[in-house]
Image (cartoon, rainbow, N blue to C red; front, side, top):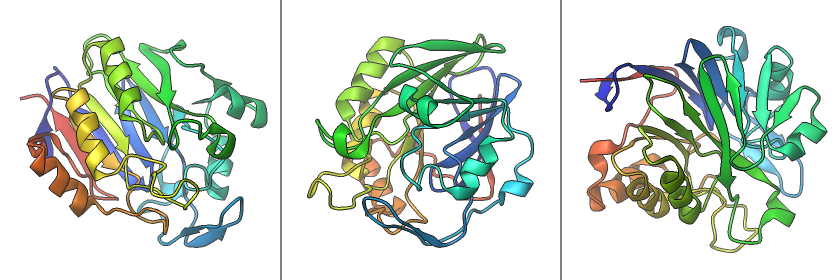
Length: 259
């Protein structure tokens, strides 16, 4: 499947399930939020129920150079098998809090950058619920990747705030490709306030991101994801943003290529 972005190269993505995506960028292989467990229950403040396993098992992922970990507190972003996977990855970027809990993780503060090969990675703000949610949901992060001759890529992590997306877009000027965690995750902690973007707010985030292609993930495989991708597609169509939406099929490579 080939689509168009305003860049002189291609980006290949493999959606593994939930928030987990493998993609090639700047001669490196990147992975977001590793979740490789099969169907299971994960105990915590609330019980998270995983309904389906990964489209590709961890043993078949191949070498990964960098993991972009939104946060480590919740099993739908880092499960048991995902934690085991981190031990085989040279570079894991996450929040400063996660770096204090997991050996080998490098924490990035908001707007802090690190150079990995030819790629500049910047930690960007994310809010895992409504304002003031951090004492309950914890600190989370997103990432922006930049390199000469390559598209600028935004990885949202578990962010529910359109305002934060607007700040990120203003800061970087142009985003070519955005991997957004959607699904309207909701465990009832804040009533009707979702913990990630939903169809309506994802469409608003797309407006803030201009003509960036949108790859939605984190909308299937867990019981607390409250919205499916068909509703998100409907909201994008209503907002006249459907031409920018690229919904990946788990287990199939999605190639985003220049015209």
